[in-house]
Image (tube, rainbow, N blue to C red):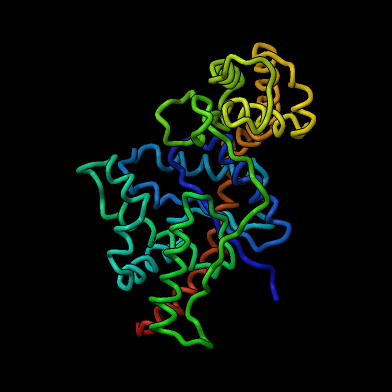
Amino acid sequence: MGRPRVLSGVQPTGALHLGNWLGAIRNWVDLQDSHDTFFCVVDLHAITAPHDPARLTDDTLNTAALYLACGMDPERSSIFIQSQVAAHSELCWLLNCVTPLNWLERMIQFKEKAVKQGDNVSVGLLDYPVLMAADILLYDADLVPVGEDQKQHLELARDIAQQRINARFGNENHPVLMVPKPLILKEGARVMSLTDGRSKMSKSDLNEGSRINLLDPPELITKKIKRAKTDPERGLEFANPDRPETDNLLGLYAILSGKGRDAAAQECADMGWGQFKPLLADATVAALEPIQARHRELMADRTELDRVLDNGRDQAESVANETLERVRSAMGFAKRR
């Protein structure tokens, strides 16, 4: 038995921020020690909303470079760009033809995003979850790390695999597709907005001051933390439901300083905000400095980044094409020669 396989990825739209790193990417890095890992930049998903073509390539490469800068190791993981593996688009079409329309119309994220886009809503936005299902199912992933907002999408992928492909084109002893399970990771940091401690830090928030991006320069980090929403009370503490911003900022300090929750809570129990915020700013700048330095190296000389992505694409294609051919054959298509 080989190691369990995991697939995950993020869109290249918007800048990766502390929430992406502390809540997800750090856990992906740890998974490399125990799992067969595939990580992609899902650029096909990025065009389900109006986008700037002039920025898409740069944003995609920046995101891939940040994967590496955050600790993803191409010797232990396959790191690639989604659109460079054509099997994603082809499997999506095959799955489209067996997925009921009403399954997609009930997806919560489609309803929310469709309201925002109005008359500009595209078929691609409606079909986004089927493409996500294709991403997952192509790699025979045993496990998929999911956040709260993606659980419905994983359930859809499982339903498509079980009810629409395996039940119709396979049999109990020879399923066509692996049915993935959700991966519940050790508790990751749930990083909240700097402007609202009850909302998650998000790339889509129009207020740049709500998040700290991984590539923000030190002076901007300091400025954002200085302006972060607080409360009038002195002393910082965890788990007080009436002080969400305090819980969030102290939690960030505990992680980024490396001191942990108990030591951070003790250190800051009687501290005022004027004393605490510079400490948090310094800890944040220091934690991000090695990531930013490695990112600058990769973007200054693209040779290594291109090599990693080319190798990752080749590794991904070898797995994805095998799965795609299995589905094509089960659905009755002539074998490629």
